[in-house]
Length: 290
Length: 104
Image 1 (cartoon, rainbow over the protein chains, first blue to last red):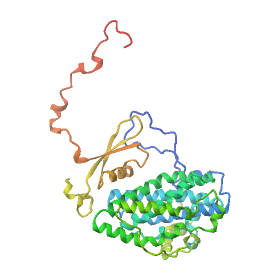
Image 2 (cartoon, one colour):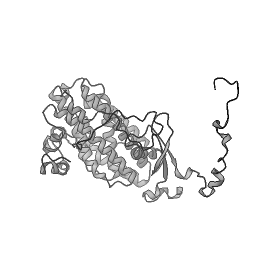
Image 3 (cartoon, rainbow over the protein chains, first blue to last red):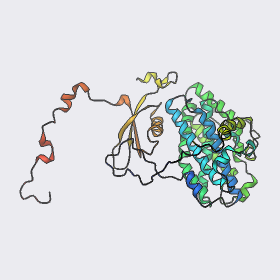
Image 4 (spheres, helix red, strand yellow):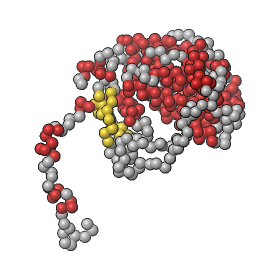
């Protein structure tokens, strides 16, 4: 996840008032980067905050690793780039959260991503599910998009300044991810008979992993004012999902929930394969940079 | 490209072509940046965001169906664009200031 070295960012570039500015002008812009978080003096104040940042980081990291598989395989060139953008945004969120969490334990984002074992990952089962067909990818994006949008919105109020700063940056991007998922849900749900059938199948396949998103852990007793309790998000999440599905002529499926305990390191068989692919290079060539 | 092949097998041959215009900053005009395929206008704007504003290039986007643009005939260039040449009186600089006019 290391950025190529020697890259500098000049934040003073500004095209305002430049009559020669072209439509393809490139500026770096200004935003909170993982590199900035690494340089900050502030580490998470408590173990609970670090554990919480780890959860958000792991969700984004594993989701990103899963989604990366779409690159060059999407149904259209334009959609390929859209999915790739979302993948990289999520990787960026993962880097920020993991960098922040790692400061509590003297570990870098790379230590956490490449050198932990499967049972040390705290991501939910939803993000490790296979991409499936395009409908499954969109349904998972919709479930996760509403969830992340709500979590990051609530984190804006967090008394932990770094968490709220990362959330503020991530929220603008998740806003786009959610809209992307929503636009496709509407089109596929109300599209052809085949697209609607696939969406219904995808909803049934992924619904079992929804429950885990809203399970409280003892951890949250120590995060009062810092992070929202997952259970408090459930009602609004369900209302927002039901609204979107209703407009797409789809409905919440009647499928039982799965027993999923990703937060305490119990994963489905999928995560091992994901990690093997993600970690192999770093483990084979420790310390390598590119 | 006609509407009739927008609902074929789902390849991009069936998605209409859109022209993308990007405004790089406040006070400037939208400039043509390129084109893309999309199933409808809303998705075209989203795709344009991904394809043409990845590096902070813009603050506003326009998309328009390529087939909705009427272009001037390249073969009629002389008739279209030759006429204004030599007509300096269409430029403000052609005129001299009249005597006694203040604040000009």
